[in-house]
Length: 259
Image (spheres, helix red, strand yellow):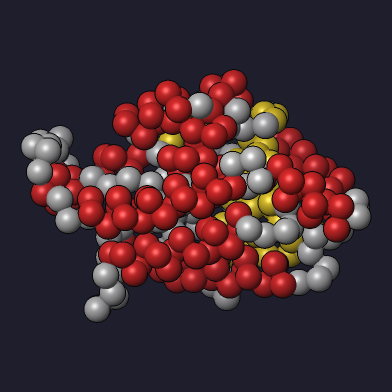
């Protein structure tokens, strides 16, 4: 497993830490693969009753590294690439084991989606959440649209998706995108405290409770992820997507034409 992903198990809590702090824990291909292995291992480990995600350094994770955004292995289509990535996200959503995100600093793009996919989100006062895919000429692909709408409401989801702007911890708490906000120095302790409380409860009862609540929006979220797959596959082919990439390389403001 890559050094960019660290794992440990404490008191029934499987802790998965993103460890690329110099890049705000942005994930390249190697880190993404290591993350997938860590998630699968935690889900299959009988000693792990709760999974806790956190980041080393000043950020949670900024999702896929923009340096490799849109890069594909030879012969792999956008549809196939995104579909494969979505499998891990659906795996987490469908897990009987509760998931907790300890969000410090940036939770951007795929990092924001990962936090939103978790059952409980604890944020530090430095937390900033955003879904900036629109600035890259694409859209969310991990349920960001539908999960944000289910937690914060349709108008707020549209605001985040259409502007790509960051919201701070206080706003995220008010909108329901974070469940608790604590001082930065207390984040890991508070998140682990919640994780330990859940891990100490009977695991079947916990799984049933999670399943009952997930039934409220579960079908909508799964359908939304499938629709995002179609949407992003189409948007990758637009001229505006190419303009966003070119403008970023040339360090200028993109000129979008709706093509």
